[in-house]
Amino acid sequence: DLAELYRNIEDIPVQARLSVVGSLGIGGEREEVLSLTRVLLTNVLCHHWPDEVNVIAVSTPGTAEEWRWIKDTPHLSSIQSHGWAERSLVAQLNALEHELQMREQQIEALKLLRRDGSGAQDIEAPLPRLVVIFDYLPSELSHPALDIIAAKGKELGVHAMYLTAAGDRVPGSAGAVISFGRKGGRYFETGPLGYNLTFRPDEMTREQAERFAQALRLIDWPSQSDASQPPE
Image (cartoon, rainbow, N blue to C red; front, side):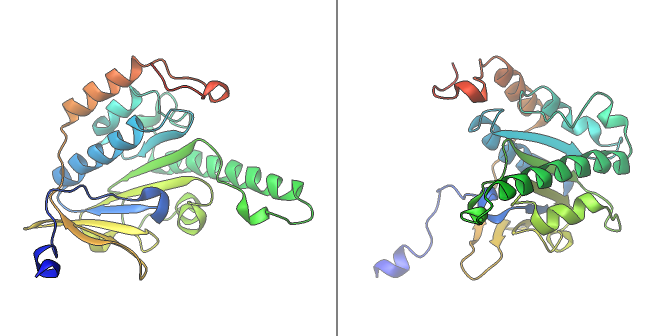
């Protein structure tokens, strides 16, 4: 019957809803994880202006080269300043913590302006949204920046992508998990209404990501004060 015939639909895109779930974990073999992360990031960056979305990567000096292509995009966050790749994990997280605290203060200031409390809960997260790549961080690592993102990252407009060796190593605060197995990938969102889907992942090499970043640099991006027209 029709229900059985269309129980599984092939060759349609699967949407990883980062703005809905808040943070996302990707677990599996490193090359598979990195390839899919490039796909997800390039999709985010090509659909949002630099004034809307920024990105940084928190990694060890030994893996920083993997994220060099991000530095060539106009979406690189100002947090990731010169010499970022040579900083220790703690130093990178300290800089991220400072950004999170500034966003907390900004939201609290907006709430205070609404002294009667009306609409205080409707305050949108500040722009630009920030996507933070955590590249296979040690599982025992503890830092206030990680705690803040886990507790209220989405409220602050900060979305983490946790890259790990396996899906069960993704922090419990992540709203969705992508894991890899022999039969492809699985995308699972927490909550009773969340997606639970299997998929064949798209792939992207680092060289392709580098070419993508260079192409983005050629675009004449409008400023936030002149965002009425799309870039040329």
